[in-house]
Image 1 (spheres, rainbow, N blue to C red):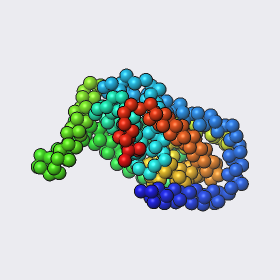
Image 2: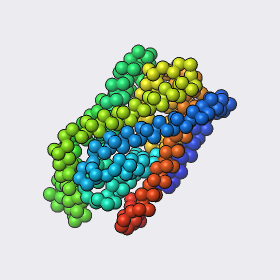
Image 3: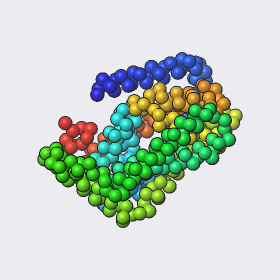
Image 4: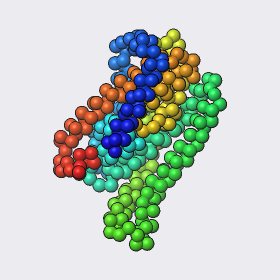
Length: 333
């Protein structure tokens, strides 16, 4: 795994270097210099987005976790997000981190269901917002047919997967295959114990959707508000570096960028891929490549800042943890 991490980082760094050389370091530096102190508001907008997403996640929690303060929920989410940024684990390590931090004072299946439902809510929100927004905003923008085909195909596949995941949660079928194997005496005691734990999670999932039928829609609304901050961020960037700071173009930048992010290879922080995707987006919308790369670099600096804050928060939360740190998914042996 360490070799894979090293290979991913080197590959991403090389891609970033090639992009910067192709566009031209001097031209890129000129664009970044124009941002100046404007980089601070760009970074703070992401913080506002994270707070709104924390409110969205709060509606996915059940049991004693519903009584957690929004600051605590925000801290746990920020810690998990930082781990997702920095590790090529398809967002798995960060979700495990969230679950561990949730269960620090309130262990039980509700910690797992909070992470699972939260993941579904965020994915559903992104599909609805990006799908509807793309049809409204990008319809009047001339894009290659291949781009539209990729977006429509991706929407259909993602939508089918999300609906399937929702059905599995709502009807408590997450451990159906494990229970089927145990019923046929396959897997031994270890699988039986796993079946017991995952059955507890299935029961808690069914209970959540019965007790709180409107919490998932409320969560989606908060997540959409958080994503809308990305459009504000794009507009502010265009306001600083472009003579065309229209809200429609800013929305186009965010929607197209979000779709390209779905295709990113899971290397740490999508190093190089984020910058390249923004170059493509800005070229499609009629801007110079340097402007797109400048935006990608600005987003990269913002991510680095919040990833650092998230790691600091993570260690702070662990410092106050009651119990044995050996059970932590990242520190355990």
